[in-house]
Length: 328
Figure 1 (cartoon, rainbow, N blue to C red):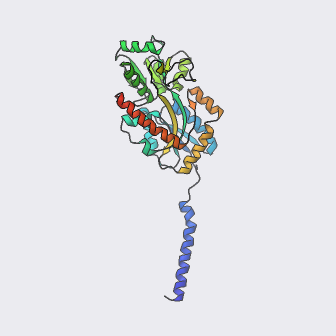
Figure 2: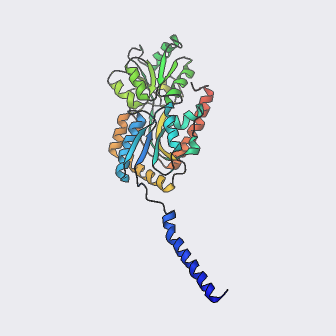
């Protein structure tokens, strides 16, 4: 090869290298996040706890991120319809799920869905927790849990109880109650606890375990009667309402809510969202708004939420097997 040819080849190679270097940032640099609206999926109907939690946090995230945050209600199958939608979404940080115990930890143990929690989701942070509230219609002639047990036994199989779907914490709480008391009731499912409460107020369902958000205002208005909470101790959210464990030792079933994104979402995006949530969940107006819903505002690291969910799934799997709980 002549000296001229070698010089020409070096010049061409140098030009290609410079061109590749110039193109590399455009080809591989991650765009700033977020550059478009963020969708928050609440897998229950408007007005329910998941919906309100999503809207409160969404408004704060919108301020912090400088982008529109859209709340999308995708109800059905005890929260699993919306959860499936989130699981299948692009892992780019523009779809966030308001997950809770039912569709995240319980439902997949009872029914085969198109998602696996530990495989398909990346945790961001816990945001709230709360016990369920056992409520009855005023026409039910009982005023405390001890009286409810013989009342239900006397009408074996004739009473309906409502829940927000198969596999929800409300469903599991009711089945645990039946298992521990030897009672029998018929399960009637709805797409969300707000719909259960509405039907209870109308007199169509006598008994339910419900999120506090839709039930508590009706209790305060005298349209429903609260008998117990499902936490192991009395809740400061409803002073004077005893825990179910006072009559049924060991009864403990507390709901929680957390934010998740599809697995594979870039770590910097998860880190940014977690950092914002750590600040948002301490804001006094957020704490007060959550308290009005009957839930406690809190936060965590992604790792803490991930470990919590993993432990919950193992615990609920044992409970479901021991109580022989099956999907309808």
